[in-house]
Length: 264
Image (cartoon, rainbow, N blue to C red; front, side):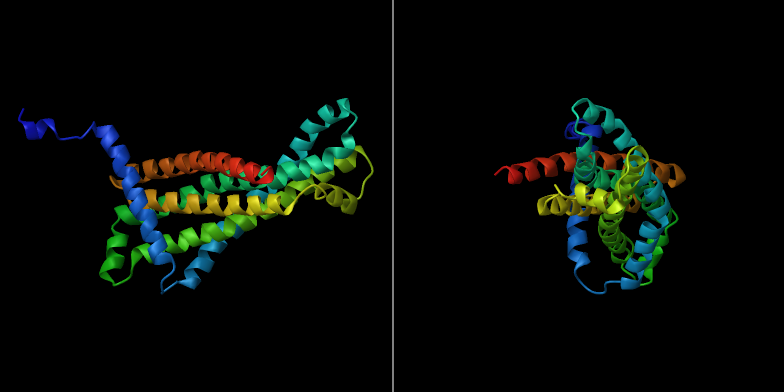
């Protein structure tokens, strides 16, 4: 084998492919920020995607948030009873749901439901050459397909996270009200008594970051899908797994930063 053949790969096929994917993702993200703030903005398509992402996800978010509120309250009550601190249950639920569970659960659900849908849709358009046809028709496929969907996830998921937190607290109240007599107003007053502006800001920040991550990863995997229907399936699977992994990683980083600010 000649020297050129021996140096076909810099490290190995898998390692080179891994770093090539990181570089393409970096270029893809930079192109998004370049196109996202220049006209045309395709507002109608952004609104349509917000409808697809937001309203179509409401039933699942409602059911999941309500169940999480009930289950987490049931699990926390025995521990607080051992210390005679059942009265702190609403405050504990408010802190847990608003700070962490609301944004995280919503983002994980959307990564599976919305992320897979976006990746499969763009992947199908890629392998059937519909994206190439858009370029021939003088339409910028990146701006129309990618930018609009990333904007939609970045806008919709923070709203869904806030809604999930409210429904989760409602589920928690339902469990508390079955055990002891309390009004909804008193419960929500106690639940939000220990929540600061920093908690709300960090929750909003996490939701925006998670929404952007889901949108950009799903669009990237779908936009570069290949090898027919099997390639679309692999791209969809990779989009969901990578989005969830990055969500957990971003959650860890943001929590560390917020805790540093809190105790600074």
